[in-house]
Amino acid sequence: MTHKELSLEELAALFENDREAYYEYKKAQRDELIANSENSEQLRRLQWRIDQEVAKHTTHIGICIALQEMMLERYDELYMALHYPDLILKKQEHKKSTSQVLPFKKK
Image (cartoon, one colour):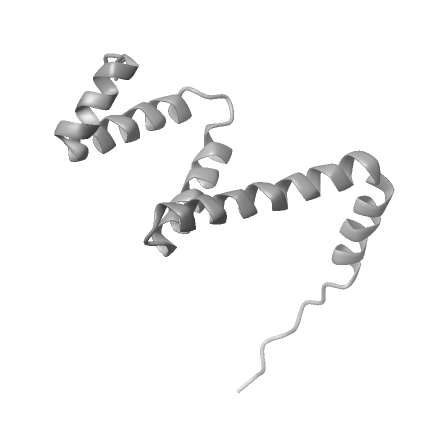
C-alpha cells in the first residue's frame, strides 16, 4: 500500500493540526519502507528495539539520549569487528565452547 508523499510544509502542517494523523502517516511510511527492504526482518527487529527504548522515556531528550547510546553501542561493535576481527572470532568461539547442556532432573 503506497501512501502519498507529503512535502515538508505539508508534514509540518499535519503535525501542527493533527498529531495523531501525523504519527499514523509516519508509521505507515516506515512500515512500508521496512516491508519493501531486502533486510525487512532485521529492520523489524531494530524498529522493535527502538520502540522499546522510546517507550521507556517520557521526554524527547531522554529518547534522544537512549537512541544515541544504542547507536554508539553498535558503532563500538562494528569498530571492533573492523579493526580486531581475530578478537571477535575468539570471543565467539569462547561463547560456543563454554556452553553446557544440563539434563532435566528426574522426579
